[in-house]
Image (cartoon, rainbow, N blue to C red; front, side, top):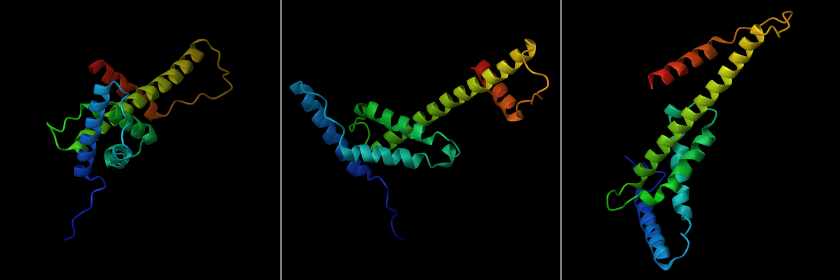
Length: 160
């Protein structure tokens, strides 16, 4: 049976990260600016984020590009925390960072959806109370999923 080819070579990524850390240390000692992250590391991070976004956990979201961007940004933000003396698996390190970035983006988007739904619900209620609605126009009840989403989100807020 043929060995499966991985899309990111963990050994090469580790070696590249070690070289980058050394160049960062040298720059700090000389008082120079921090060098930019090598293209190979950036490409690997991008591949990890893009591939992780295809997993079933994250399918169906319309904001996958934002999720991927958040994951890449967080990896670059915390790249200096990877310690090759503690771990020789940068693939797992970056995957974990990206995973949690995805979860944070999903929570942000759910909060925005809640705000949008709640605002439209409040506007409808206020219009009825203030009698500013033309009653010749038929009021449509919001779809059931909106009411469910609002109640579920509010239950989670109370729980936390």
